[in-house]
Image 1 (spheres, rainbow, N blue to C red):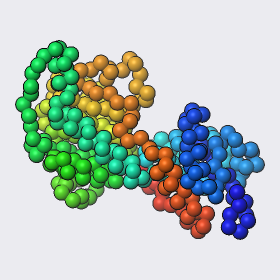
Image 2: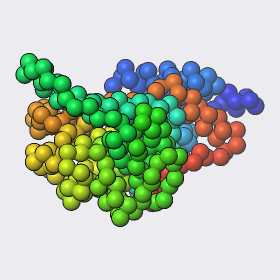
Image 3: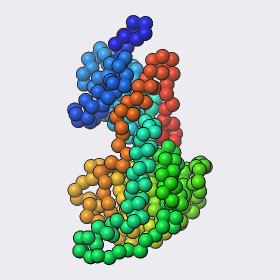
Image 4: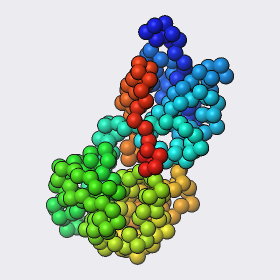
Length: 321
């Protein structure tokens, strides 16, 4: 397709390791969002077309595929998490843009509230009582008496904190560096993390995976949680020491864990998580990307780049997000 001055624009490749149906759906959504562009799966591009591409839209691409685009200058991910891109593209100078989508934040906030309520109202115990055919009401606890600790106070954490506060939960927050959110008692640094863990009845993890956060919830930190506390991990599996988590659940120090992310995905059938009575396994569904809203955001960034040559804000390679 041609630009305003009749100059033919390079094709916009969509580069992913997804199945054909998923790739087709993304290409269609992106094309609707930017009809002035030509969006095509990488496999459809000739060698000549690949030589002209300076920007690519990506979803966990194989790095070798990106190397078939010799003029590539920047990539726009349609995912919020970019730790895999950071590793795969560490030997390149590519400018990496991650998805920051208000719709994604709202979807995550909904999931955090839903599964916090699941734990707050003791749904795992009621499910067990049903299997045992036992009619046994449990003592009720008011939301005001159940403290939720949020690890991660970025866009996702801010939206989750607002939803939790609206439901009546006291909310504590933690981030690597100082950050303030309305109505949230915020902590930072190692001492701040210890202080939050000691007060949390439900711990919610929304942190990006970086060298600093990998293994953050190790055995010592899990033991700092209140006895009987619960964990919700909607971030990345590698943030939590898996063996330490199992031990904390086996001993009863942790009451329950809702896990949407794992070190290996899909979760192998042989994994201990599936059958553990104190674990709820979810198949990485807490905050799926909305194709329409994501495509609109990508389209706006591409339009800005075409018009001005200005790159959207990118990932800080030092911080890892």
